[in-house]
Length: 345
Image (cartoon, rainbow, N blue to C red; front, side):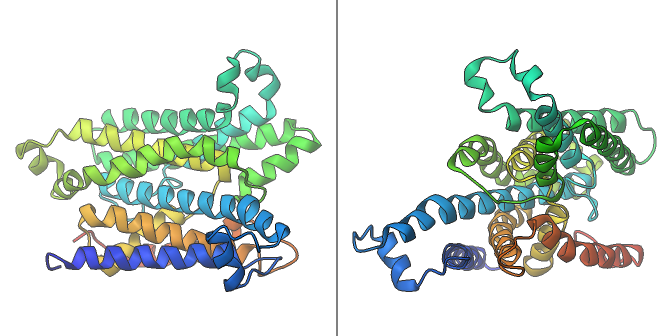
């Protein structure tokens, strides 16, 4: 890339995100015309009250949350792939999403017991906090298992993540068995992923955690580039490998935990988006991370738009749409990886 080329693509992706957000605001069960959307942006009093309510209280919250979750999952996936130096790694495959979901489901089913011991101001953040702790706990366990490995550390950590993911899914199944009818309806939301019923409180819960992650991760891009040369080379170049790895794990777990807490488990997104961006713009993490965030936000908005319109008036969980997109793509990646055609170079 030339000096100005990365900024050009950055502007293109920002423009694409703006278009996706506009479409998300205008398309739905209540159609919004471009003129009405313009009146809403200018706060014109001629806009009908019901249109203002739909845009300001329903569409805006859903659009913002979908963009935040898409950006956080995509950037986390890109960072985790860089740390593991493995193109098949993502927050879901190594168990971080499952760990976050397990803790969140535990709060849903055992909420009355757990929340009774929490301070009142913390109860609002109980769900994202539990999901964050679940993601961090799984990340720490995987990291410790990898640190005791005498062989291929990366492969060991990925295999440990898959095993822990199975345990977390078993735990989620147990809580599902113990849940009552009201809790079962809520658990369905977690297992399939959805932005239905998004409120401002959801954004308030997730925003601090996600914002820290999506701001801090790109700052570690240059260190991820050095890690791609191998841990031995990076160590000789003075890179604090252990510190960088821990920072990325914590930031990724923070993003994934907060995302799972407000949207449920949305699979394959952290795997698909980084690869699409890497194939299009190259492996430089200084740009791969912000590109992934912007493209992931736009793609999540499109996936959510499909989910709430393809079967209208019914609404599909967005996790089904992302699985339909990500499953075939993941199989294609496995085939390329086995043929030696997939790398970070």
